[in-house]
Image (cartoon, rainbow, N blue to C red; front, top):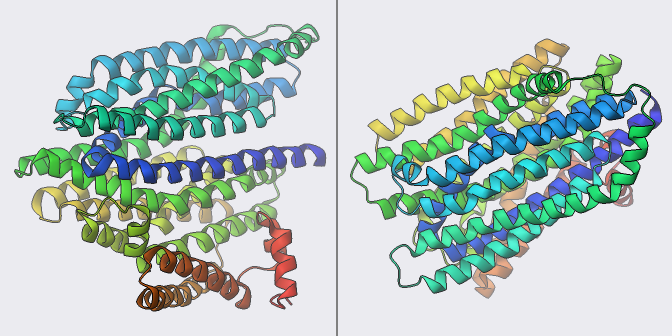
Length: 544
């Protein structure tokens, strides 16, 4: 692979990574006002509905874009443009057919799913979100087509557009629904349905945008098809077989994660119902767990993995060249970066749990003690989810596609058994979900770590990867908590005290990392905006 080609891959991967960061940040930010509007019961219904939608989408079509992009890229590099275009058409027809079937299942099976999950009002948001599966089927294939043509900009822009429209419509629709049905006993269900409208609106906006871009590219595509020296050499049956071989490992890997979340909802709802807990309380508890706890836990995980994903194409390129020393260096760097983000995030969420929750969710006060405790006890999941996600990506980048799937399946099996025992035979209730949320990624971490070590004769350096971020985070936590306590006692202004504590935490942690020489100069350069970090550290005399 030429240097120019490698640089282009890295540049395109970085575009998608930056878009991923922005999309996740928007997703986190709009869920905060959304959660405040819905209330605990509405959040519980919304989260269960969205979990079912996510599983349905994963099983039907969400894994196809990766397969399409990979297969189109292979044919485009070989100048087989007619085969690439036929692949696109076959994949589109197949995806729309499967997506339509999945959408019909969600729409007409909504009442059955409401009874299965023991969740009153669940059918309403499920029927609203059903057409989204069909829309996403077409949208995913178009994204895969552009990525296969080595341009990430249409995908990146469409993702941002989708999330922005989703955010605006969700908040507006929830506000309208909650007012219109204020006197209804099903107000929370209607509010959840309003929230899910944003998902459909965002997907439609992104689809219209990509269809427009595709129409602009048609003249260029026609020229490519006319210049193809090979013509069509693959039948639709051969193309479909290639798609299935490529997509099945990805579907299995993603399905394990998605099924895990919806299985938690299923078991919790039914087992708590069997213990005589009323439906509104069950929905409220799930709303606390899925909206307040999960939103904050997923925020640092999403940012860390999105930023680190820009280095994965580089690891794959080194794998193709057989440079094992370079592979190990890049893996060491990406894992160290993820840990350096995840550990302070976990510590920060634990020491500032109540202040952060009060700042972000001022209207959700009924279960404030519970949500604070969940965040304190479950914040370590940030570290394990970040590490399990990045090690799974590393294994896939070194062509061990099946290994993360097997590890996820093993962990899921243990998770289901453990969670059932905790919910069925103890009074832990929602705390059982926290234990499961921590142990599930922990098992994957251990198994992935072992496989990476065996495959590459690899050992992660422990001191700078774990001990320095942990020590720096402990110092950061003391300063953050002290700043909040001191300022709040002086001003009694909660927002100001929390914001100041977070700012102090960031500054103290970054200073400690540089002071303890956690990253070498080269590792800092490899980070996003690494050049600016190096220049700042030099001015502060924190680099040798």
